[in-house]
Length: 235
Image (tube, rainbow, N blue to C red):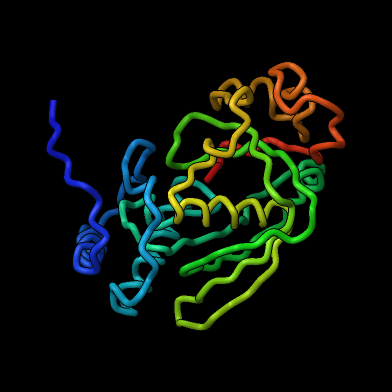
């Protein structure tokens, strides 16, 4: 048994070295799993720790890893890089009824640097989510339905965009990753299900049956919005 793992190093030199190692490997890196400390620290804001060219190559690599997984978002800490950078894209084919319940519309690819969000409006909804760094589990998470995202584009341009529905959920999930927060931190613990149990029992367009049978979020469904299952193509 080894206890010699080094603590996470947030120095610019170490971040640069890690990015160069990953880019130089010539293969898609594995996705870091829960239990690794890089997922539990606030990542370093991007302040030029890597060159513009390296950042561009890193974003391309992250997009490839996200597609292969497959998922709808990937944050740099999920590759072991403690840097506030993430990529998002949702082009999956979704049943029209399910998409309507989830408020799920296609999200064209974009990358966000040093993001933060604020809640718009008072409505929150509960949906099942998964995570590429927590293989095999899904759980219902209550999140604001709409958010305003402030971030920097890879070319350095300050950006501000508003998102609602499923897109807002993706934005919150990935921004959380950059601040050491995993979706299980926000989850209804009684809703936690294996992928197999979720697919067999709780994959309906809404989460009413799961709420009732697993005993989470008691009360009228209208109090919580229409929750829907996050598919196995999770994040």
